[in-house]
Amino acid sequence: MRRAVIDIGTNTVKLLVAEVDNGIVTPVFAAAATTRLGEGISRTHRLSSPAIRRTIEVIGKYVEEARRQGATTVVALATSAARSAANVEEFLEACPLPVKVISGEEEAKLIFRGVSSDPVWAGERLLVMDVGGGSAEWILGQNGKVERLQSLPLGVVRLLERFGDDDFVGLSAFLRLELKRALEPFRAGSWRMIGTGGTIVTLAAIARLPVDHARLTQEEIRSLVTHLNALPLAERKRVPGLPPERADIIVQGGALFLFAMEALGAEELTVSVRALRHGALLG
Image (tube, rainbow, N blue to C red; front, side, top):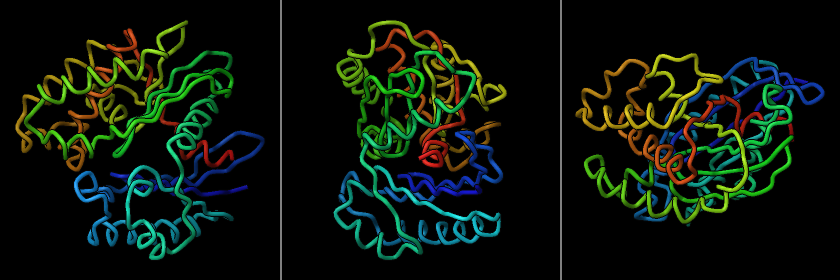
């Protein structure tokens, strides 16, 4: 069966059209657009009218594209920005199809289901970390079964709005403190760390690695974050592998991965391109 899912995030709207058969997801078409639905939400607790308009326009295009690609069903899910916005109903009423606003726990479970659908990880105990625009998730489990999860409102857009683009010292101190406390329960036992989401995919691309299953060490991520933070925004936008629309949030996202790895005692992670959309298609 050919199905489609639209993931409406705080920073990005993503479409995946795929053939789904006996638990196997075979992508047919994928797209992503930066709309910053959650722009300003940390301050106002509301979705702005321009952000709603930008996002609705992309959703409409993606619904049309999904049908053009032959999808028999189109499911739309909204995450952090939508679940924390006081005026979310205004957004939902304007959408061209029904949208389900999912909790942080539901989001984490779908991400883990998506990552676990990769046969490469069969039998392995995984600690999956996903960084989005509005939140970050950590999920520990094995063979598709979740043992422990955590969802925190520490997405890259929220961090940008709190610390700006020029307070790396403040950002670092905050993340070190928050993550050491929040991730302590995940340290026990052995597991393979998996990174998902636009930040880690972009860091792998900047490092000129084949993205899916790329391995990045803690020191490689530290080096990338240090280098990118030292560049003025205009120069950062010209870095090969870094989409210009991600230039103002890549340091925040990289710092999240770096300090999470420090807190967890993880020396290396493996990148997965499977996440929420793959998990939703298997639901």
